[in-house]
Image 1 (cartoon, helix red, strand yellow):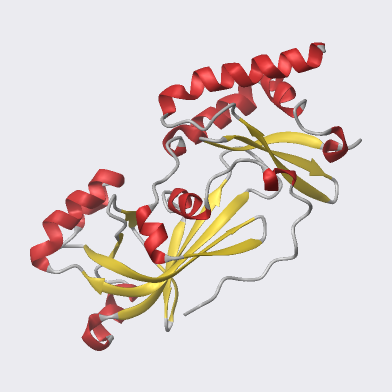
Image 2 (cartoon, rainbow, N blue to C red):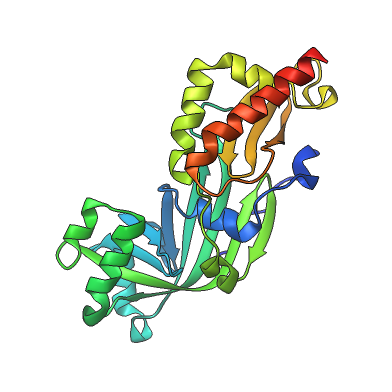
Length: 265
């Protein structure tokens, strides 16, 4: 199977000791992103119409019926094709290095049997409703990817996640609202970004660092300190982890109140 690329060692990450998601949860969250491609022996960057991980942890792919991947599956012994799904996590706000993480899901792609297709399509639509599901059986084919290996890379660090842990984990509860909140924060609330930046140790920001919102999850914000020749990512945690998106407003309010109080002291 193709392996994940190596990266230079990241700069010191002050959030390393902070409360943060486990790798399996982060992997399931990255898997919700739409930027993805699939590779197989002899097929580099095969066209992918949609993908999802169902609530039960099954990886499903929709590919063109006349595409390279569908053809490779048909030619594979027992229609069991060694394949790699690569998903990229892009920041929703402008950054010098916008890719926050990458996920590699490798295993064996096989067609979903006709008798299982209806249930699989319903499970697919539950986690990612998309019109391409209506084309399955005509211009598109539905495949399942039975996992053998899961690798998550964030900040240059590659972490192995067992397929069992990946299937049992759940995406971050803020994953669906993160992009809108970060865009709104970056575009209309420079004062809030400044308050959050005040929670970052001065030695991390330095004299020439620019602080930008990078990510948001149930544990808090991640900020990126961009400098002329590098960057550092740091966490600003909520008082306690959230369990649903409905708790976000109150958590942000508490965080900003604490930041204002720290400024006055």
